[in-house]
Image 1 (cartoon, rainbow, N blue to C red):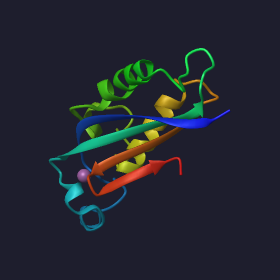
Image 2 (image 1 turned 90 degrees about the vertical axis):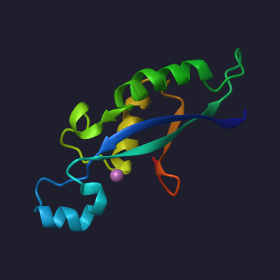
Image 3 (image 1 turned 60 degrees about the horizontal axis):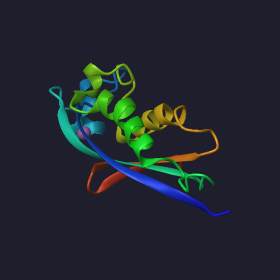
Image 4 (image 1 turned 45 degrees about the horizontal axis):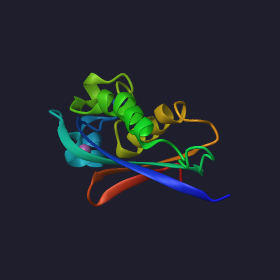
Length: 136
Ligand code: NI
């Protein structure tokens, strides 16, 4: 049997502020720089959702792309697109919305929604030059 990966690319815009409430304003500014701006700022996030597994004998699919895209839209994009991550979402009320943490949160949301025999990997671009991969 041939194992392969199916990748779905999606996009969302969101605002955030990186901040550690346990630190002074000076330390936050020093560590997070512009991303600590008190009035928030936005990013155009590019999301790649990779599903790895074997082709289903009946469909020839690893996963139905329509099912996958609906899942991402409903569980991820509806939740985060055009939102202020710090203010508008439960996930990042206390968790710092770094690109790392956003990727982990997205993975945890989607992992519970796909069949357990399928592997899942998330690639999330915060800028064209910065992205994270999870799990690694
Ligand atoms: Ni930022």
